Length: 172
Image (tube, rainbow, N blue to C red; front, side, top):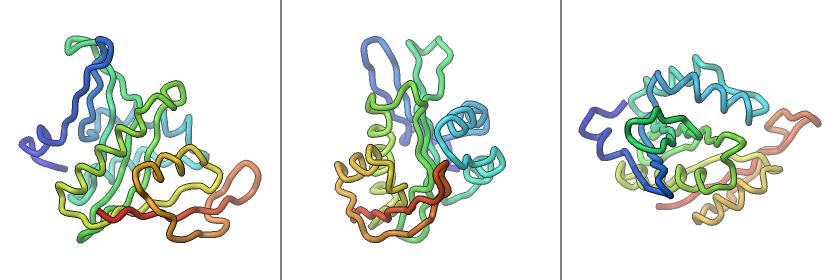
């Protein structure tokens, strides 16, 4: 995980109607809240152990978006993402926003933050896979300039059988 100097550079803050939103590196203390969201929105959720391993990797880019009214109020995690940088490539492995906060721009904020981090880390490309039935996510990725580069048939399990993965990439 990044040192404290980088942690400050990688934190992001916006003010929205007296509401503070911060994107910060994911830490162990965030995992219980992340797990609630993960179980809420993912058909095959990651385990707590997977998240713990992710944040321990030197090449991980894991962040949460926190919401609070002011600095004295306890903030709540409303979304997160986990990516990894290997050589000059970033792979987005997991991104989610709590159901009651979806379609409010928080996923867009997380993705934009990842793009900034990838550029800062001198990555040349970001790759991801997305369920072919997740139209909202595909549109979000396309709005950032991601292009479809392939398809993995029957990649994901779903309540109705198998679902293909759409492969997408963005050259930086």
